Structure formats: structure tokens, C-alpha cells
Image (cartoon, rainbow over the protein chains, first blue to last red):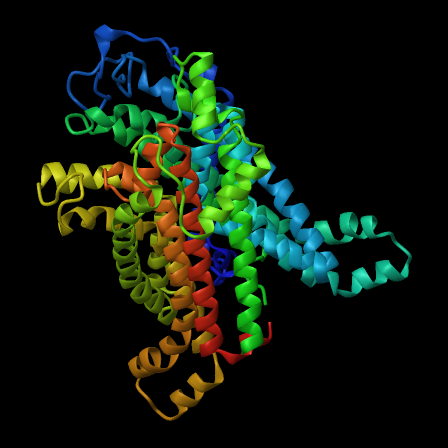
Length: 291
Length: 305
């Protein structure tokens, strides 16, 4: 799943037309999803929680026997699929961003401290990263949610506490590079305090690398949330998470495959878009090449 | 070399000890274990009985000491639900998870190595872009969803493969493919960047100057050097895959360790959950240690670090 090496691998090659096309595509996907997430209540044609057992499993618009009031059909409880999809975008984006903020704070603080201080402190940070990597993320997240009961807050905290490793790895290695540069030495000579140097000299210079990690982490968190919800230990029902929608529709997938295709494609396209945007960001900020 | 080995071994042991502590703390998160075990309909008396029977009335530190002492010799207690020794339960299920992991890794390497070599050889050209597109698609694909799609396609529509269960080798084909998909992006990127680095080195220029064929340079000279880190990372990937197989095992009802853990979480079977977390973590630590050692043997420059 996650891998330390991935971040340092160059995807580069010169920036060409198709790459920036990919970036724009990614930006469009993320933009549309964010828009749907923010304005969901105004966009959704129906209430995503209202059940109507007389109108169960209506097919989407490209099939026969559809109802124009439900362009994406209805689920096994007669809830409007489009509305649930739109509200699902809220859950995905919310969890992706909240988890990344949580894990980002933990990982960046640890990484910058380790990379800046070096020596014993750095050994301790490296040890923490090693321990974190040896913990099976999905299993532990499932166990925590299983023990404490599922809720959005718990899910965000759990994933946030588990996914800081890549932030820490990148923050640590980039801080180490920046620490030895001339302008930092100049700041020391000018008598700046350690806190000032960290905040004003180091952080701004590693920020672009961290931004790229953040996009990767948002995508990862969204995928993990979907997987956990799919296994029944993520977002609590009846909240419309895309993973949960796939789990609830699983029984019907052999006869009406669209019930898992619609939320699955949404999930895939969103994560794909975020990754495209991340790659574009990497090219744009020139963080691909690192020696 | 010996100093390096001892140092790595000590770190690995410390990591294992930390995970041991975390696995214990994990199951104590919910507060009173006895209430969870006794179930929702239990009376106060039942709860007290459970507390005594499972030794939960002892001080936390004593409980921790006894868990560490017994876990160190492979005794994880008895499962509340399966009424069986946890160690033998995990022993029964482990072959399935390990088989799945190895099948997945083999498929992943069979896809990643050629793709990575191709992309590096064609750097910046069409083939490279297509490979990079494939890795992006692989990264974005939710594994459980891919599993369901394969089930519909190969299990129901075409009827080629069994949809779920553990009976025969055919049962491992679809889960293996899905698990491989989770490792392909990282392995392909690593192969590609390793190859690009190798191709730009002096010994490749020498080989070119000698007039060797392009294919021979690519496979004999560059790949051999690029493969070292990939093989090492493959071991680490196997660790990730074993930990991540819980999702895939649940999708395909493959009764491995991951499925066991998922069942146990649903049934509040804490001894099993903490044991599986610990075992998977220790396997991961062992695999990374092995990868480090292989790397150090193959590349003496790393030993100093």
C-alpha cells in the first residue's frame, strides 16, 4: 500500500502538453467534487435519507424502465442514488481533508524536529516511523472502530494517527537538506532563534514537498475510508459514504451491476483526479527531482 | 558487518516490543473488557464472573506482564468465540494468507518489472506515458471494488472462476490479482527510476562504447543493478500486502488471517485481534530486516549507514 520510496521517485520528464492536460483534468475532477460536497444540499434532487420501499432499485437513466425523477436510479431502500452520491462526496472530501490535516500536523512536527535536530532526537523520530510502518493500518483502524463504535470523529482521529508516516519521512529528509544551506547558516549568524529559523526559513522551503505529500494522503485517506466503510467499520449507516453504498448494494450486484458501478466509478475518478493533480503539482513545484 | 547486523537486530526487537505494547493497549481502549465480553444482556454478576474468569480483575500492569510473558513464547491465550488456542487458530489460517501474499507478489513482480523496464527504456516517449498512466490507474483503484467487478465478470458472467471460498487453487486467482494491483504502482515506479538511474551510469556508457546490443545492455547490465532495490522493496511490499489482505480476504471470503481478524473484531474476540496485529507486525519487521540484510550483502556501501 503505502511506500516510503514512492515519494522520492521521480515521475518527471519535461512538462509537456499532455501532462498539463492531466493536471487540468485532475483539477476539474477535484473542483467539481468539492463543489458538489459544499453545495450538496442545494444540488441534490432528493433527500438522501428518505426511503421509499415501493420504488426500490430503479435503474439509472441509460437503462430501460427508468424514472426521470431519479437519474441515477434508487438503492435497495428506494433512496435516490444521485442524492446519496452527492452527499457521499461530502463524506469523502471531509474525511480526506480532515485526516490529512491531522496526520500532516503529527508527521511534519516529528519530521522537522528529527531532521533539524539530528543525533539522538533524529534516531527517536526514525524509530517512531519504523514502528508506525510495522503496524498494519487497515487492521488496526478496523479494530479501533470495532471496539469504540463507528463515528466520523473517531474515524478521522484513527486514520490521522495512522497515516503520518509519509509526511514525517518527507519532512525529515527535506529539512535535513535545507538545514545545511547557506541562508540557514546566515540566519544563525544573524542571531535568529531556533524557532524563528524553523518557522521562517525551513518550513517555507519544504512546503512544496509537503503539498505534494498532502495530495497523496488525501487520496489514500479517501480510499481507506471507503474500504473501512465497505467492511462495515467505517462511516456509520445511514450516512451515504461511497464505500458503504457499495457494501449495501453488494447483494444486488449480480443482477444489477450498476448499483456498485456508480459509487465505485465516483470513488475511482475522484482518487484518480487527486493523484493527477498531485503529479501536476509535483512537476509545477519542481519537487520531483531530489538527490 | 557484524556491528551492522547487531544494530539492526536490536532496532527490530525494540520495534517488536513497542508493537507488543500497542497491541495490548489497543484492546484496552474500550475501557471495561469484561462488559464487552459478557454481552449486552449480562447482569452485574455475569460481568464479575467474566472478569474473574479472564483475569481482568488483576491490575493492568500485571495483565500486561502476563500477556508479554506468554506472547514472547507464542502463547496468545484462548479465543473467546472459537474456544480454541489463538496460536493454533492463527497457525491454521496463516498458510492461506501467506499463499495469497506470495501469489499476489509474484503477479505484481511479473507485471511491474517488464513495465518498469519498458518505461525506462522509452523514457519520455509514448510507452513511458502509458506505463505511468497504468500506475496512476492502479493507485486510484479501490481494491475491494476491483474484487467485486472481477467477481461479476469472471465469476458470474463468464463462470471461469469460483466467486468465494478457499477450496482450490482457482480460489486464489482473483484475490491474487486484486492484491497484486495494490503493489504494482509502487514496484513499477521503483523499477523505472532504478533503471533510469542505471542507464545513465558510466558502466552503461562503457557497454555502449563496446558496441553491445541495446537489449543486452538493458537486461544484462542495467536490470541487474536496478533489480537489487526492487527485490528488497518486494520483501517490504509483501509485509504490506499481508497486512492489507484483510480487505481482499473479506471480499472473497478467503479464510485467512485477515478474515479471522475481521470476524474477531465483529465478535469482540480480543485475544485473537491483538494476536493477529502482533503477528502481522512481527512478520513485517522480519521482512524489512531481511530486506536490509540482503541489501547490505549486495551493496557494501549501505553498511556504514
